[in-house]
Image (cartoon, rainbow, N blue to C red; front, side, top):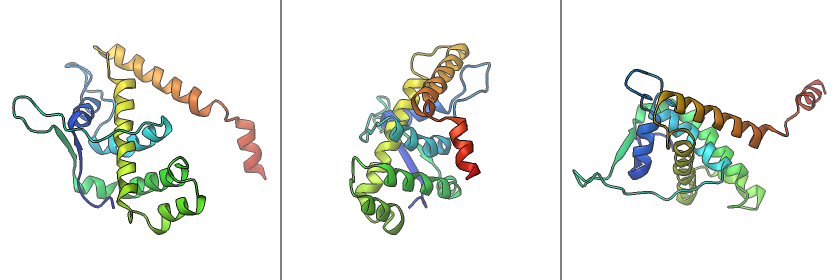
Length: 177
């Protein structure tokens, strides 16, 4: 697992392309530098936002070929440790799919990649995360200021949604014990 090229297809390929493109002609700033960066972050975003997405086969009307964006095999292999960590984390936390904790532990560590449905679920979180990232960071923005504002709003929403209950004093007391 995570030892070969990964391919985004259809609308997800188009969205990855926009997530890794410069904001405008005068700027070189991007939301993500490379496709592999989207691939590494999207499953976590998809999981946290509860977004799964089916594979899409949107075609380029000029060529009648399905849009695609690749993450080259060497980039996947280079990021294999991070991708495996993300896979294991999702397998451990996805109690909606598998209620039994021991089975989730087995999927994450003992039988990682043995069940094709687990890999497909991970990939559906990847696609769902691409959708969330596109909607939150790109959709509707027309200039660099709007992209920056969308990024700021996403970070603020993420902080409120997932870190609001984290209290620094509690973390410090855990570390002191």
